[in-house]
Length: 165
Image (cartoon, rainbow, N blue to C red):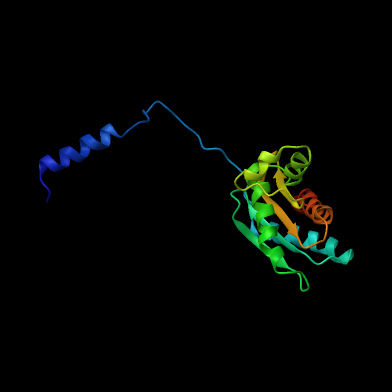
């Protein structure tokens, strides 16, 4: 239909773009993936802890890329906490550390961190770690102190081991 010259041209292009020789083998990494079921279980654990203490918060769970998997907003929490909880979770996932690390660094004079894109310097964002890999993060917002948000987030993150065993 296209002619022999066109077919030869396509074949030569395919040969040129064949970067991996037949003898070279490559492998993909295998990683655990956060599921909706696990995200809900983590949020439920964190929510129970918050309710036990009479705290109304927003709890969000993101995957390792910072994309939201689950969000829970308690009835009497201020709506501004929605975005803050999301940003805390995104920061913890992207930087693979607690958001409290940014807060502590700022308190110790690292003021340049204010300009760090995606760095939320408030307590309440904690990475979710399974088999030494960050599979997501939890972000909590709504309390008058970040310490309370942090306690809830830690409680939820620490439940991952029990949930998956």
